Length: 416
Image (cartoon, rainbow, N blue to C red; front, side, top):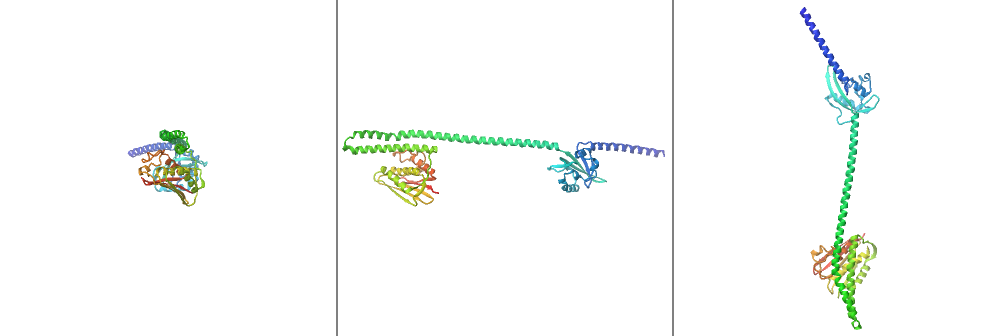
């Protein structure tokens, strides 16, 4: 009996020790739960709040009695409550410990209806009373403010970077544009220098012969004083006129090139009779035709055209003048104009010395002269000027030629 009483006493002492340790653990849990610096609440299978710590109560502005037995939707903004019931039931069917609303902005609602952003983690446990969900709720208002501030700073920085990039791009474009302008100016200067150099070289060559002719003929004219010597005087006077005409042509060519390069040639379109205009030009050129040469002109279609008569005259004077110069005596130069309705076509055909295929590739370049015309005076600028005048009037010029068989120049202008 004594032995049994002793054993019972030991059991009571052991049970008291267990209760004491249990009470200590319960106190620790309560301290951990109530003094945690994060909101913690526990809900049952129906979503009803069965436990909530002081921190959470302070976050939401409720008294404990107001939330006990109330569903968790009470702490969710009104606009999300309906959907949350489905989310809650889905979680109960497939519970797992995880953060809630990954990638989403979550909000909780206080008693006064105000909202604040939250971060929520969930875990679930079971015991004899049923299944329970623990929610850890963290108010992230300050973090959101910091993130918004950082985002604002990032946006401002991106905006500044974008503006600086745009400014840099504009600066680079302006620099490139300035570079192009400088290069264009340098090329213009180089061309002008080349033009001056070629002019000096050309002038020294082209001016020497006619000036010498003028000087000698003027001296000889002065020597022929009698009436019987009139034919000799007339011959030298004609030589003087021809030489002056040549000098004038050379100067006009250089002046025309200068105007074209400077963009100083103005196109003045007007409606005029092209047939009458070309006949007048041909009549002017009768004084320079060679012995036995004949200029035959034909026209088809309407004679009324819309072009610049002055530029057209320069084109025709050059093309017909070349045909006269490079064709032999007793030859026919055929000139034809045609108005098709959509275009005006001019053709000047001669039976002269012709142009090689190789030379035709460079025919409209400045100062270019064919290999077979070295003994015939000229500046090499005429066809270049003609091509530029044609372009100014929305036209183009082509050449078809064969050595020793003649040349045909065709100029085509669009008519609107």
